[in-house]
Amino acid sequence: MSRIFRTVWKNQNCRWGLIILLPVFFAGLAGGSLTPIDPISQNLDQILQAPSGRYLCGTDFYGRDLFSRLVDGSRITLGLSLSAALLAVLGGALLGLTAGFLRGWIDRLIMRAVDVFMGFPRLFAVLLIAGFGRTDYGATVTVLALFSWMETARLVRAETLTIREALYVKSATALGLTKWRIARTYIFPNLLGTVITNLTLLIGTLIIIESSLSFLGFGTQEPTASWGAILNQGRLDPIGAWWIAVFPGLLIVITVIGFNLLGDGLRQLHDESKL
Image (cartoon, rainbow, N blue to C red; front, top):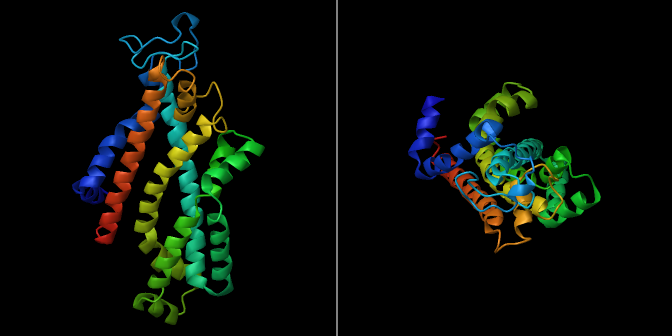
């Protein structure tokens, strides 16, 4: 584990990605211990207070401390995006491995499903389903994952088609090993680099989509804080209460950049066969 971390840290993109993301993850994990003020506690005497020593990021239209809500929102936004990305990548990897290893009609069926799902604009499809359904945590994760597995399935299928022709796989087949054992022992471990890299890049994409959902009112609902929901409040007075839109917007941009840098670095390491 330490060797892998040292290898990742030596890559410049990975290093900067981790430097950006570690404070965000720490804030999400620490949560309320970092913020003495309750993120949902209203104080109508302190409505729209500009950033100051008492309120580091100001207050919103209900007098709630924006810093507390941003810290609490990191847990919601990252939790949703990570859960959806894990579900999508695991499902896509399983389907891609099945299609590439078994081939035949199963391969054709899975690839046609990929084509159908990729034919829908992702954000539009997510908005459509979320608009007609529930918008709680589980439903949002499910909807995001439902339209995010296709790229992973395609990548894993393509790599599986290459690996299954390797000599050690053919030797395992000649020895009479079952297809399940060959896939589990000889093929899937060689796909981990691709899966981890795609997971990292997908998280950044889903943060933007989840924030867009919350901004439009289809994601997490008040009083629960998420970066997109806080950003939605900022549109009510973008000039007079600029801090409500600026701080969550910056957090979204910086976090997505961090995940993209980490994903690009992992891709470089994977291409160099160091990961």
